[in-house]
Length: 241
Image (tube, rainbow, N blue to C red; front, side):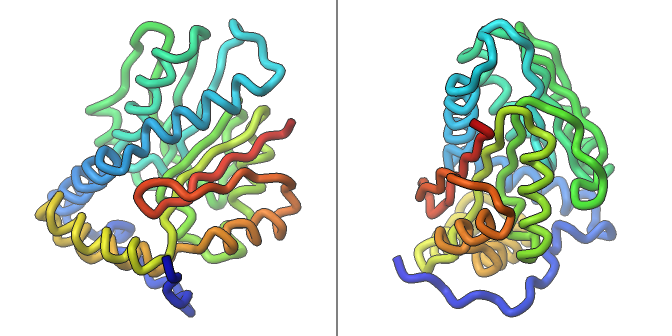
């Protein structure tokens, strides 16, 4: 599918505006949760994370800590935690991180829990400026397209430094089909005006598979696994091994 031309600058998305009305913010979080469900993002990420863990030298009974970076309302954090809790036998601590106190409060009110071998919690963190907590694996979704190339390189280097095993992320591909999906999906899945504006803008601000590979080259991280995934996503895995 042909790529769209890259944006010269990445304009801020409405959802990132701290002055956004709380009701509009919550509607946008609901929209994002629906998009994740339709995109099968949780199952894609959970499968990739489980594969990274199983391919590591970690023993099968050693506790795990998993970070969800820029977790937003925590729906994806909880969904990935639920899948991995049923897939892996060892205790797993999930920590969702986000710069928005409003998003963290929303996530805590809906998803903080201890179920079986999985514990889920959330905390405020400026992941671009603060040190990431040490963890086994880190992941994020729909985050890197918010960052310019310098910030994106720093971010994946930070994830590599914080994660003893490796990291996984899913993000948009800058293609015409992706833009079509963004327009149609936000019209069908939500009434959120914020999502309907930010969705297409996110695609235009995202990268191609080649551009994701160039970020890893700039970060001096070797052998990333970068794949095309439904629906017009890049699914990226990197490990220390």
